[in-house]
Image (tube, rainbow, N blue to C red; front, top):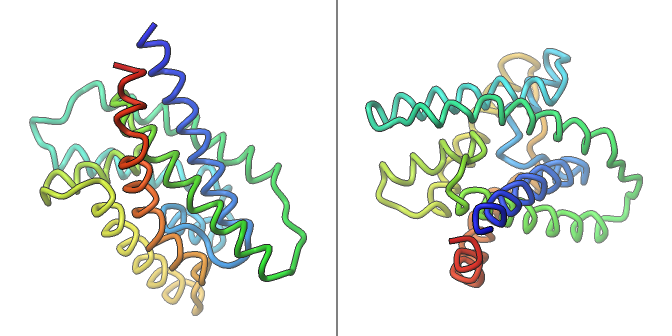
Length: 210
């Protein structure tokens, strides 16, 4: 029964994560750092957002292999088929969600919701200790190598993603793509959202699933 709960929470976490990522994108205030690179690639090369996300996630798995070396588990290669499923969910939410509101206050409220959802989804999927989202798995490895928590590592990875996205946009299109107020807010807020969720609910959540 515990495994059933854990698997259910894991799936819920991934769905919440995908919803938060796309909602952040749809506010029009700048995309979430975790999706900024594939979003930029999608816009520059006219590639489906889900497919661009899949390519980046495969690179995240390769990054984990390099950083963990012999400690990398063969089991973690399952992140690749999971990334295929996750990228399809990204496409579903991307096609489903449309925001036709130009009221800044409404967009800011949606942005706050997106940041909270992204943090909650990332925290749940990682803490279930089954098979992390490839990007979060990579972030987790960064945290381990730095001897820091997941929330801190998330901030470091997000900053790196934004810098890479800015460089790609300027190099290939002569402008910055997808980076804005929403990106900065997510870059600062998602890591804190993860930390806050873990502080408030991690032990209760683990008690139900372990």
